[in-house]
Image (cartoon, rainbow, N blue to C red; front, side, top):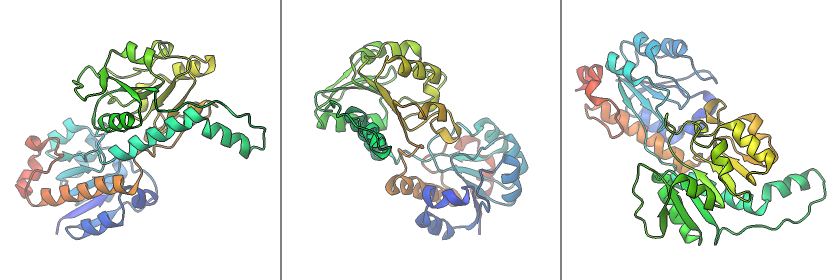
Length: 330
C-alpha cells in the first residue's frame, strides 16, 4: 500500500483536516502523522517522511529544494490549501514531484466574516462590549446601516462575487475594482481604485497577493478614503503597508478597520496593528468553519486517490513535470 505523511501539527489536525478526512485517507493509504505540535522544518519533515509516496501539506509546511532532494521516494506534495506560495514549484519540477492545491471551499465562510465585521464596525459592537467588560461608562454611539451604504470591493474573484451578491441583497451599493476582470453582474459598477476609495463606506480587500499588489493599500490609498470609512482585509497581509495603516488610524484619516490576516506568522494580524483601539482583529478564522475545512480536506484526500490511480487530479499544478509520479503510477 502507498504511504502518505500528513504534516499538520497535532493541535491543528482536528481543526484543519478533521476525522472524516483522516478516516477517508486511511482507507486508501498507510498514513503517518506529524508526531509533534510544531510546524516542521524541511529537515525534520524529510526525516519523518522517509519512504512516503505523498505528503499532505498543512498550510504552514514549506516544500523546498531541501525537502524534495531528501525524499527520493516522494511523488506528490498535496497542499491542503489554495495558497502555494510556500512551495518551490521549480524545485518540485526538477525532482519530478507532483504539486496540487485545494480549491476555495471558504467562499461563504469568508464572506460571512466580512459581513459580520461590517456590522460590528458600523454599530460599534466590539468597542461597546470592551467598555462594558472593563466596567467603564458607555456612551451610545450613532450607528450605520449596511443598507444604503457603499461597499467597495478590491479584487473580483470567487469570494468577491459571492460577497457582492450578499451585499446587493442587503441593499448596499457595490463598486468593484479589478484591472484583470470584467464585471458584468447587474447592479455592480466597475471603477478605478481611486474612485472606489473616494466613494466607499466600507473598503474590502480581496485581491490576490502578488508582486503587483504588494502594499497596494499604502499611505496614498488610505489618504484617498473617506474619514468615515472602514477598511477590511480578508485577503493577505502583503497587500497592506502596516505603518501607513497605523498612521491613518492615528490621524483619523479612516474610521477603523477589521483584519483577519496580516504579516505575522501563518498570515495572522500583526500584534502591533491588532492592538490598536480602532482595529477589530481575528486570528485568520475567516475560513475556519466545518464546511469550509472539510471541503478542502476531503478534496485533498480525493486528489491523493486520483494520483495513486494514475490520474491527474483537478488542482494539479505541474502535471507535465511530475516524472516521479508518472514513473510510479502513470
